[in-house]
Length: 72
Image 1: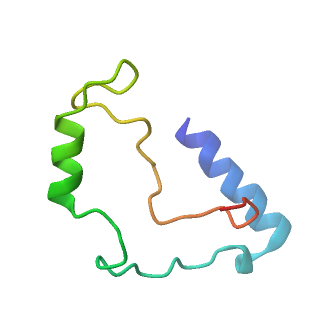
Image 2: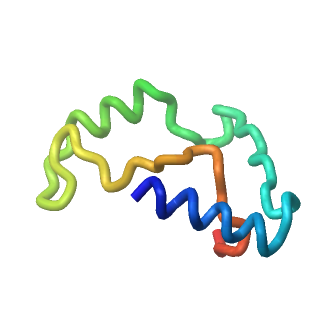
């Protein structure tokens, strides 16, 4: 899986050049983003049939990268 992700990066870099990489803006925690202890509390206390306690839907392998061609 990791190799596939890296190959995708390589293909896009070769096609579009270094300008395809853009740094993400830093987010101020006061902008409505959950604090780490809030996230921990929510995850630990889940009781749904899809997301139960201590589960996550997806953990992003490259948290600071964003594919610019995808809509937000």
